[in-house]
Image (cartoon, rainbow, N blue to C red; front, side, top):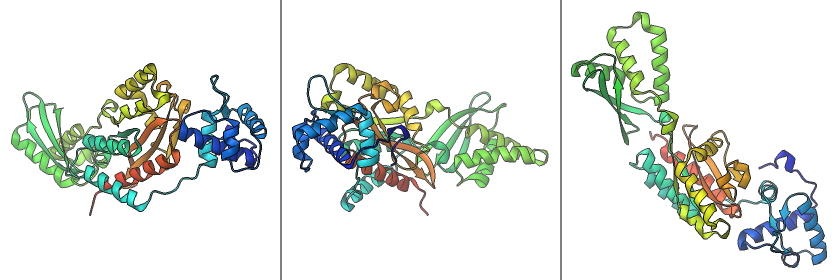
Length: 355
């Protein structure tokens, strides 16, 4: 992870080491760190006065600040960013931890519908990190159609029954333009199943449009009606149907900096309404690996005291969702980052179609 442009500082090795010790101590204890403590824990042969001089420089650079109630210092958002981008060493998860996560993710993915899978995966993240876990529901267009059937309804309507990925059944009422009988709808179902079963919903939508444009002049009536019915049944859901699941919100009440009633109320309302949270996670879709938002970096006021560690998960190389952990800015990044990274990879692997 590189240092973000404006955050490149000409810090000496000693200043970087003291900043690293300060951030790690504050993450661990949650209390402002004084110069005597830093001098003692740094392992350097320097006085508290020397440390105070270095801290004054770091404060001028905007990397640390002094709370008005204490002579000690705490990291700022910029300080955390410099720490994460330049000083943090992230160790891979132990093989045993990976195996336990893999077993839980595979169990969650087996036989679950997308919303249930997102709920269980977010619960796993929350349980492992002791913070809030968030997972977006896998995007529909990258799941495969196994079978489609149509049943007549009253008026110019029909019920489309879609079997997707062998684990989900979707029912959609569509407008048909004219009444259809059961036999007509069966012929249309047979045509669509013969030509499109096994393709992703996105591939089918693209093929339907292409077939309609390229072969309209040579189409039989059955082909034309089948393609039009397929287009209506497989229309992309509106963006409002996209969803994410948050688990473990109450875990955040245990952190002193988030225990203020007004802050908690804003935070829980944000989790409830989700729209802005989904917008934030959408910024992670194009990320290659883990992406971290610290406090105000999210641009979302209720998360001003929080950090979001997120990563996209993929099926067949395509991003179908995002997962992450929400916690205080003083979270143990070295522990949370590999958990989020590995969980995203495992969830994508569990969702990949098996031969």
